[in-house]
Amino acid sequence: MLLGCTPSSISVSADPAPTASIVFQPTSAVAVPPTATVTAPAATTPPPSATSTPVPVPTVAPPEARANLPAPPLLAPPTAEQAPRDTDGSAAPQSRGSTPAAGPVLPGETWAAQELQRRGFVRRPGSKIVVLDPGHGGPEVGAAQGRLAEKNVNLAIARKLKALLEENGIQVLLTREADTRAFELPDALADTPRAPLRADLQARVDLANAARADLFISIHNNGSSNPAEAGTEVWYAPAHPQGDKNWLLGQEVLTGIVEQLAGAGYQAPNRGLKNGSQFRVFQGRVFPLFVLGPSRAEPRPARGITMPGVLGESLFLSNSHEAALLGQDTFQEAIALGYLQGVQRYFARGN
Ligand SMILES: [Zn+2]
Image (cartoon, rainbow, N blue to C red; front, side, top):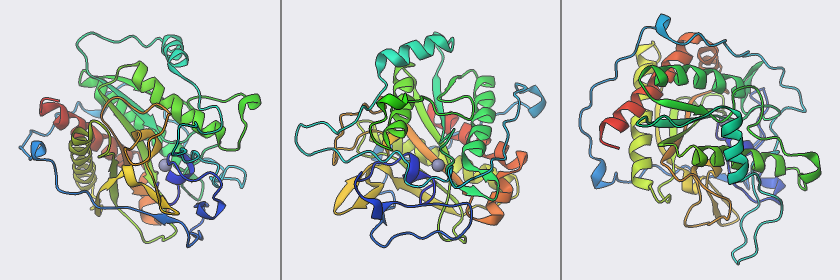
């Protein structure tokens, strides 16, 4: 989510800036401090290389042919302790000089390589590899509506999408496979309240890089202080070295989700592509979405994804109607099909 989930887990914002905290609680009563400015610039003119060419809609195997994965629990009691206050992934803004940010931004390449081995992940020659990143997990709830927690909805969609991609010959790695963080920072290393989340987010990026994935897709759902806000948006990083590909992937994923939701009976407002390189402006400084990589405007020493990637916000958990849809298998499936369509059309363009 954006006002709800994103700042608490995937953005980079000023560390010593409690006034910029955007707290999303399981009710619609959410106050956004006036000092917190969220930028959501519309995507600019598409790169010339990304002009649209009709690509056939991917064929999808019938549901019964799919992997029989256990459905994750959707209900989570969003206690006050779990509510995503600014526990977040807000990393300290990088100093403009050469001094690195305080805190251990773990883990690293060695950890990631060992983790892939522990999970039994072996690259399959000739296969495309897509890393799916179900947002939040464990103590990071994300947005919520009643007892419906974003972290669980994200994982449910990711599992469905994993099955769909695998049916289509694409190798998939999930950054987390259960209701946990991707990496649990030992307490002894948690020098700041945000250190565990930073380490978790860095772990997700490092796993994708270690897997030498072709794509990184972070799966989220949205939250807002305004319960009327609705619809689908996708974030991408134009400042990333592969910004053009990010744009194309984002466009295809956005189109895919909106089309598949419509096919399932819900006309989601298309909120467009959003610039993740300028996710938030605070005190005149620009902060990118962490998992989409460093921006040129605000370079960070933390490692960014080396492959194209996007972050999808399929629907709003803070909107009661959309939350009701997100709790249904049918609409989770539609969203997963939307991502599949986007990925397949992206690959079909020769990427
Ligand atoms: Zn989220």
